[in-house]
Image (cartoon, rainbow, N blue to C red; front, top):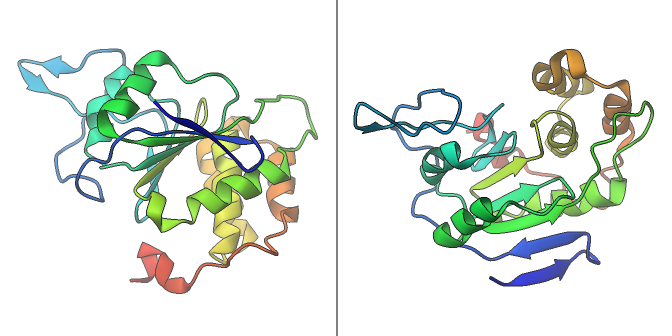
Length: 207
């Protein structure tokens, strides 16, 4: 396993494999919980908590566990953006290595204090990885797929020229009762100057 420093040590990368294909397989996914991966001899495809498609080749979720690995294989992932400071679990690292998926780790503390913003420089570095199509298909995740993931996706939406009301609606759909005013304020004030604005054709919704 090879680890590199990116963006002045804000990001760690772990080389792991690329499965063939670029989008979601047409197999049926069956939501479930726990470590159960088989039922009546048939394999289940269990998406991670709060899993959703962000755009073509970009997905988001909470922290995947071993029950989700078979489902993740159907996405043909090349990269994962991990937004927590804790070391990646050994079982997850083995899954990445077995499937040649590259891990980009941007350690953002999960702070519950009010008015404590996510570090802008880390979000900016993560966005550079996110908008590089060479890293797609890509999964973004933190612990629950709500706040840190929501802020990164919200800033990505600004690059896509979404209006703030739509950005906040999407954030609140995942954060629900846990929505934070400080997160929304961060997204509102985030300056996209210096970042490449995405052409309309980038979004699958524009095709």
